[in-house]
Image (cartoon, rainbow, N blue to C red):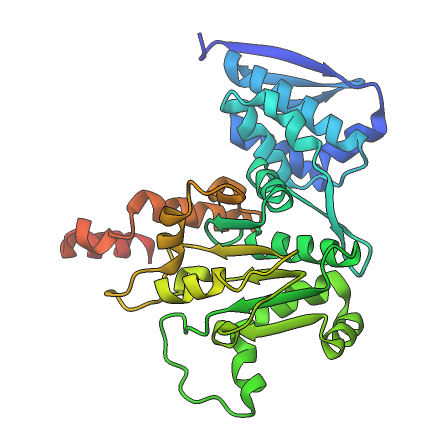
Length: 340
């Protein structure tokens, strides 16, 4: 029975790997304990797991996965520990090896390797490498933009493309900013800031500026794409949920010879008027059966930001954004009073 308390022992050959599994102040082991409701203690040259029979088995497989990760020289975070524990508990322990075998996507300007941190992200990178057009649909924090930029920089460094083109629609997130000061570049910069941030991380500010002046990198609002044909380019359309159907069609028909396009967006954060169809949602429907176009769905499980972000996204998915409609005013008042 699951409630029956059992013990399992994981033997460790290399103590230095165990140090990586523990993490700072044992935070990685605490993450596994919390996820699987077990108790893990240090016993001689190994770890002893106490808990329900199924959970101790899941924890054993999770720790073995973490040991393999440490043996590869990877720095393990509590988020990694939680993710691997969750894979084990979902009966996907066989996929832990796939997760561990992820290749480096790019090396940042500071020498840090960029790798897929979840199976969903790994499938995303694989789709980018294997298709001319990739649509990535998922919530905030799943690495959609960052991994796309990393893939673009890698293709550029390998001379597979001559130019990186980054674009996104200039749509405010629910609030009107009014007229912005400065020239046209100053006006569009706030909308393109996330793309700049990713490029700075990959290339460094000085190298980025050099390529920008040479025309090897172009960052522009989507409206500037009309009438162009982009050959030998790696093109990224970010925040695509805020494109119209016509804008999406216009963008897709800009792709020239030797080019690759990645389209990213979150269909739960559409800032278009209610009567306007999202170009991203429409494209996912229209293009789903076309060869050389991949549609990748990332979920809350692929969130790699603060652990609280994942919980927030899951809460919104569970409530369906209809808290006000599902709860009467008196009940809402009681809920709020309990939290104050």
